[in-house]
Length: 112
Picture (cartoon, rainbow, N blue to C red):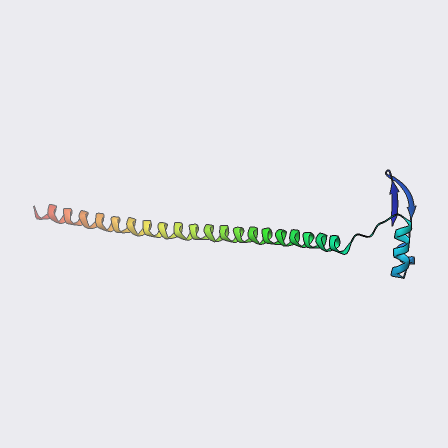
């Protein structure tokens, strides 16, 4: 742990040398740290959890929107393909009808 005062390094403390919770607590008191009440710690933890939950919710919503967008594009492509197939069928029918009309006209012309 490095302690700073007004942006200047004042002291480095190797916390791994403190193997006892009480010794560590005493060190912090000597350095002027004040332990927060359990209620404040719990409230901060709850706030952090709520923030995390909200972030996860937003990410899930974003994934869902992306999925819906992909599904919509897939549906659009399918509809466009179906429309192309219907257009091709209509064109084929028109060509068949046109060929039939030409045959009828040729038959009629041959009768005269």
